Length: 215
Image (cartoon, rainbow, N blue to C red):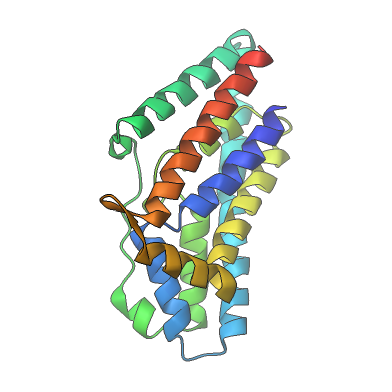
C-alpha cells in the first residue's frame, strides 16, 4: 500500500517540478540546443533517471538506519502527521518554509546547450534536492520513501521520478502543453501553477485518507 503511494507521489512531484525556474529553463535549453535534439533529450533523460536513482539509493540507506530504531508502531502516525503538515503549508501558501535547493543554472547552459549540459542538467534535476521544488510533493515523496521496504523500492521510485521529470521536458507535445498553460492565467497565477496547486492538495489529501484507512 505504502509502495503504491510512493510511486504516485513521486510521479506527481516530477510533473509539478516543471512549474519552477529550473523547469522552465530546461524547456528553453531544448528549444535552443545546437546539437541533435533527439540525442540531447536522450542524454538528458538517462542522466535525470540516474540522478533520481542516486537519491533513491540515499533514501534507502537512511531507511536501513531507521530500521534499527523501533518506530514501526508509530510509522503510520509519523507519515500522516508529516503529510498533514505538508497539506497545511500548501493551503496557506507557505511551502517556502520547507528546505529546498537553490541551485541556479548558468545562462550559458541554456543558450549554448550541448550534450555536456544535458548530462549535468539531467543529473542535477534528477537528484531533486539540489534545485528548487514547487509545492510539497517532492518532500512528501521523500517522507514516504523513507518508510518503504525493501530498500531497492526507494531506488526504483527515485528512477521513476527522474524519468518522468525528464520526459515532461523532452517530448515536444508536453512542452507545447506547458507553454499553453503558461499563457493562461487564473487570477494572479498561471494556469500551470493553479493546476499544480489543486492536484497537489488532492494527492496529499488522498494519501492521508488512504493512510488513515489502513492504520
